Image (tube, rainbow over the protein chains, first blue to last red):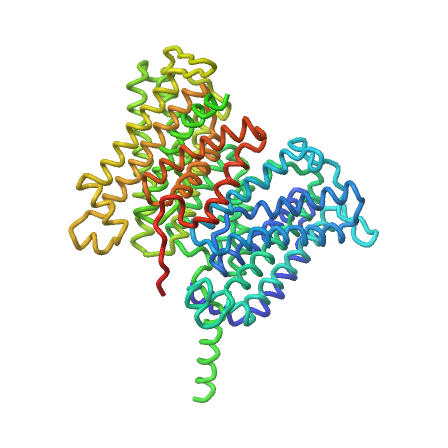
Length: 329
Length: 292
């Protein structure tokens, strides 16, 4: 196992390019619309779990209302595109802005809370948002949902085939990975992780804890909103039943399963957990129960998640030092 | 009208309180939110019903068996899910995910074995009703309230007055120190899970009889409300969980009848959020001091 990790760390650049190349070739190899639909779902969930991982894994704030941002993004995109006929670029940006604003709205009062109080408030927030979606008939058409949302269209080009939608989703994933990666590997990222490890200590050495917390909440909200906008255009029908607190809990599982605070972990974990239930289609109703069993067993075997304690940066540095030593000798 | 809604609210709130005590107790000893508690609540209701209609004729016997089985489920969650995690000293979040997994297992197992449709529930507590002016109190309400109060008293006495309860409080202070004092830490934690499961199962059965129907998804929403009640009262403080539960029930019914029934849960959560913002440790919670 360690050998594999060492290999991954040493060739991380090449592996990233290779994975991207695979992802690009994928829809040309697997052309069935069923496989592509699963692939698109996986990509969308990767954006969501990455954004939640930013909050839970890197900032250490146990948010259990992430589906609310997803729903806010989806509803923003749906309403703007059905009523104002906005193009997807417009709805994507609007969804990000609105979800980001809600991130700020939730973040500002909530961030002085800690631990389980924060968890419960985010749960409550998700429930309130869902009930507003359900009851504000004029805006959201309540439980009827919004139907006939136009497909993705950028610059006059309509993206309707599964393959083209797949590539839009892939672009979103790359964007999300880029955003999360550049936040984590910057000064801000170090500060964010120091807040996770101990916020009082972080504040005492002059890190503006509150500002960074709010910032991460906004970015996470924006990314989830983006995923929501994509979802609305792709599925073309949304209703509040998709954005419940249990959806939020599922997202938490996706974000933690691969390993807290690990980008490759989030991608790997989300892919596994989304594809697995599909491969068990023949088991019909037992599927969801087995999903639960897998989660429990996984936590017993590897409680830190798939790649939880694996610090690729550190492994790489160690290998480099070893190589230098050998070169000298 | 107001008084009627108040009584309805207190009745349903007292069942929330029973589930909330479970959250609070587990949180007290393990600092963990047991997300499976809501599912156990639903399972308790189902087991009583299925035993009653399918196997055993007598309601009392099936109720007792149902409680035993749910206690066993609570024990299983701790013994085979969480104890291993404690031994490995892993981050608490792993335990949280484990309880989410168990909740998924329980809920879907009920759907598979008992069917996912809403089931009618026999009301064994119906002995008529009393009317004062325009307020009607049913016997079910009185009995539910009495059972809840009795259980709350019993739990409080157990936790605050007996040796076993003292052990629980000790474990919640420090597991290592308790172990050194000769307390069977794992036993106490298992016991806490069993008590919280039994309380949840009783609440599930009572609510099933009160509304005269039951369905597999009822655990999720009640679990969330009970969790909110526990936090509202102050996590880890038993009287807090009780008062929180009853308040939650009152907010909910009053909000539904005076503001909007569609926003029923939203109102109770909004009140919860406001309370927490002004009093971050809940109504009865002690203020926590952060040390570095």
